[in-house]
Length: 146
Image 1: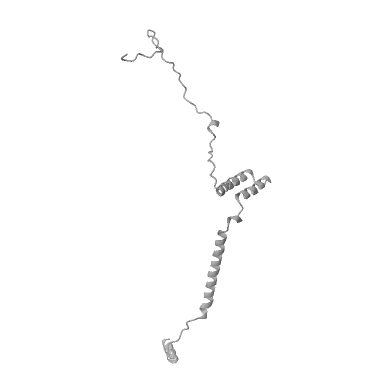
Image 2 (image 1 turned 90 degrees about the horizontal axis):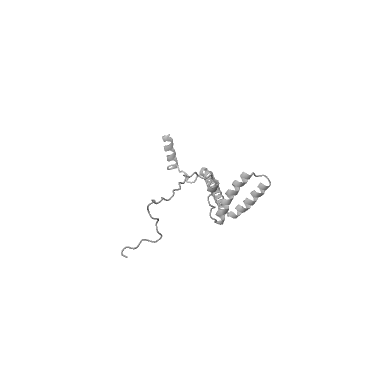
């Protein structure tokens, strides 16, 4: 094989010349460029869709009105409507920058519960003075040194 290569170089007057531009790389290169372009277009469209204005989306108030009409027509149960209303209420408060409602506990109020038993109260009478002593006077005792 080396002999054939040596003979070819002698006849041509030098080493065989390799073409710098080959058409066999043209179509894969075009396909690669097209795939990159299509990918860039898809990414741009998805980014535009993701950043679309919120005006396209109905407001929480509009959605709540729609679900209210579904509930009134009987298409939603009371539990489903209450869940939807609580979720949309949170979104509505966020949209209007209102503070969150006070947290409600699941415990009943203290007045509705049974009173806790208390220790019995012991009433004590004041001690009785001894029989041979005088009753206390209402006048204050004399000041010392008077």
